[in-house]
Length: 177
Image 1 (cartoon, helix red, strand yellow):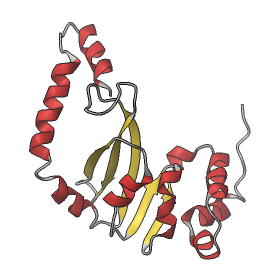
Image 2: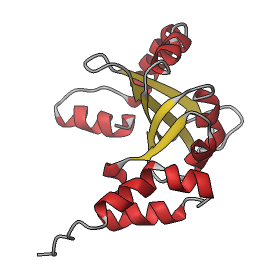
Image 3: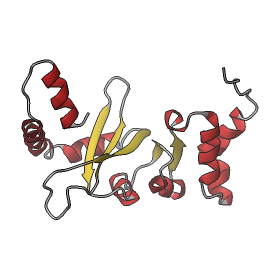
Image 4: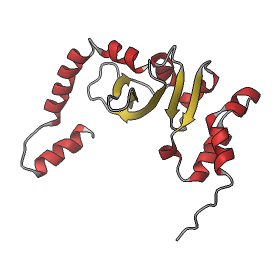
């Protein structure tokens, strides 16, 4: 939740907690965390399933950038059941290069939304690119995501999206109430 919204929530409860203070706390934690960041990344990439997503993130007074420019917080999560690993990566852009660099050398399943920046996963050796069902509901959106993928003969036929479309296409579509 953005700091400005947290600040409002705290104020509603009579707590005077400024977003600048929360930001300073976050930066202080980051300074400690960055030492173990690569250890978490290496551990995360050992597991057969990784989820990836990104969200806009506005950074005030960021050197060399205007206040109105969007930055992005990238999220990568996975790991063993009950002991999940969640890694965050700040980037000044939404370029798929951020995820490609982060997941470099990974082998396994990667679950993402339909953002085109993840399309490179379709061509990575040893990687199965899976669509996030929550991001592609209703079902018609899932088919739309499938049709937007490059239908190369090998990638398309073995893709999780295509095989899922084949499995769910015979299912009845619930009528709207």
